[in-house]
Image 1: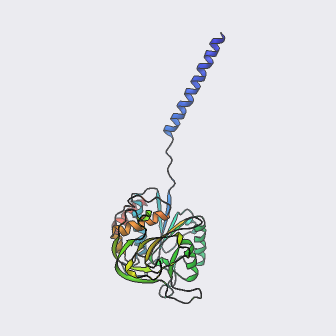
Image 2: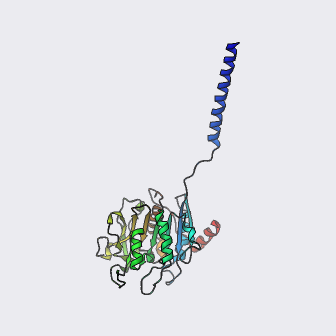
Image 3: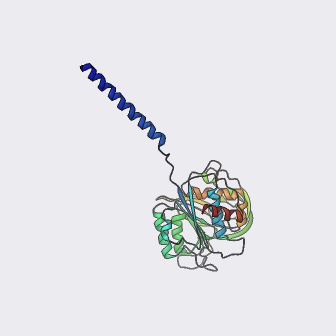
Length: 303
């Protein structure tokens, strides 16, 4: 009788173990896979201030959104805002990267920049403090001296035209040229899949970089510019902040037509996703140029 009870208990224990194992296997089979957290990229366009085909801020951010959304890199969530700033400051709170494609402050013809204001710079400081990336394209690299010191901290460099006393100076410079653009750091991920290329653009050069050049990663050079600084011919750079966060800046993109150039597209898109903390594919980000009609269609579909 005792042996029978022991045998019954033994069978019961085996049954419980089998049931537990089956439930565990079933749980693994039906549990949804875990996805990596999406990276949020916010694209901000300023209002039009130049002739058609030049400084096409709105067209540029819309095109970049569609190219990012339809590229070979997944896990990106993009949003764009017009008129130089989102309708609410809080819309920046989850951004992994904020790109500005706007006017800068040059102290002459375009004195005001939509984001170089006391209130908005304070908002951006909060985003930078939590590790958000910053990207500046073309004219948005221009700043007065005071705000330029912030851009040095956040993005590693800026277009410098004013000294600490407020007087204008000729430190940075610009030149419209049809020139060869070469890779300054071919082994950096932003250069993945990119080859040297020729474009006509309004290049800014002799940019003011932070004194501690260790954190500056030159990405593109235009040797024919004849820059006088150690990094004088650099027209695109990446930056790793000491306290966390990245930046990518390019002084090109005066002419919207340059987006037709595959290497131009690839290096700028590579730079944006790198600054957002996304791994750049071995052959770089692949995306085609989209016409205005295609951009409008894909944006409508996304809505």
